[in-house]
Length: 185
Image (cartoon, rainbow, N blue to C red; front, side, top):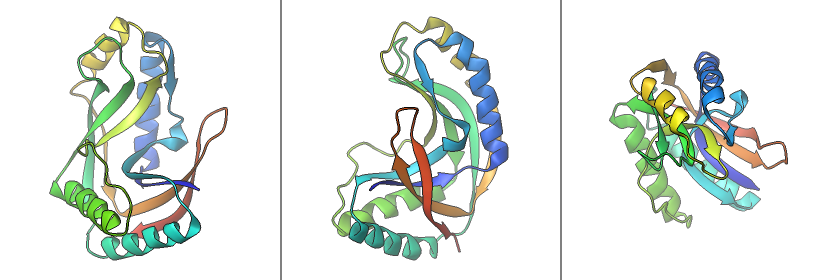
């Protein structure tokens, strides 16, 4: 089963992101926008794992969730990967948080590596994906829109739990099914 660990977003935050996408859509060509119900902050993508491995991940999440208190997350700014280019691959909203988010993600990565899961090569860059370009084109109009929103706030929420999701790939787009939720202490 294909799984990942993430922070699910509050409905009010998802609504703000959906409204932002409606503003961006006319400016962006060839972008596959994320469905409102699929907005999340990925902490660790695990890919295809078996049931036994899912149980190991659950044990790690139970342990870590008891070590962290709820913390604040602010959505602010827009941008793209690769940064500063007209041929964007990923459109995102940035996140601001205290050190708790980075500590949690780092400890999660380390605990899972000790259990035999490969460590992510790239540094953790917290963001919420809004859309992806399958074939990046010159997106000058979209780039200007993203610059317009580069300092705008899109809501704030308390992170109270971590969710283990199953990702079910379908032709019309992925479906993310929560397998388990782990409340922070």
